[in-house]
Length: 398
Ligand code: DHB
Image (cartoon, rainbow, N blue to C red; front, side):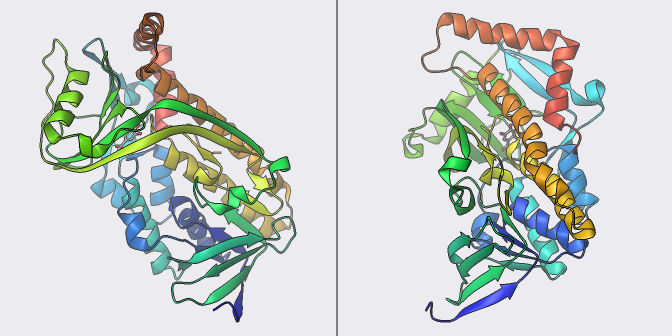
């Protein structure tokens, strides 16, 4: 192939058909602005990739009020607080009482399913399983995407605005010349070992546990499937972990005088998730704008990744809409600064939750005691708890 290249003309060309790309395409579609989304994975691969499961109220509103789906309200679970557990005792942070907001337990896979169905319902142009994707002429007013579709046909998309919503491993960010891109990056000396288990919930809400044996998170998926994580070495091999060994490790991280016991069941998925913090500054190059993980990565503690992606999309959509309504580029020019404000707040929150709840392998006794001092200071203070509740449930969208 490669001889005949079909040119497609659209307003907004979007690389990446995860939640960020699809949500943007959906909002644009509703505003009568056409877009084309290209995605290298197939629908089934995205649908079955396990990601985090907590939606801020602002994310829920984007799905429901935006006409994507109200399934989150029916099949999701509203959570009005979390437990911080340390020294073997649980301390509830009551979101409703502190800030009058909640979060929803609704896995990212379901968000993708809803968005993909809404795009299909509304006649959106989304091309999955494309290969050889390239972005060109980003710094001009006619940026382009080249790709080969799942039938082997070659295309070139000509657009006014190009959006990189292609995740942390994507091509868009990497296409920005190094001399105009600031990469802010840190790595952590630990990871999460995540499991899915067929068992009833062990507790009504999520438990974030700091223990002498390291961090554990007791999360959920449904009445019959639970999601749990424990801090591990980044190079841990899941095959070395039998079900009994995993359950014993999780249990000792939540043990306490209250006798709290995890409800065990068969484990049907095991994965190790690496921890990174990354920001690409600015989140723009010419007429290419980055959204979601393409522009930034947060460590998972606090579940900000998807929520941050949707918040980017909300700001970017307004900027694109304003450009087509008025011809003014002011909001597009302001996109990166505006998005980055929330990004850096979320970076701090994710870093803070991570450092307060985990134990670095080389941590001194001082560092260990300091983190417990931090946790007890937070739960003893209404203001400390309220900051956590505000950040966790989500700052208002711009
Ligand atoms: C989940 C993941 C998170 O990172 C978090 O903070 C809470 C929940 C989850 O996958 O359920």
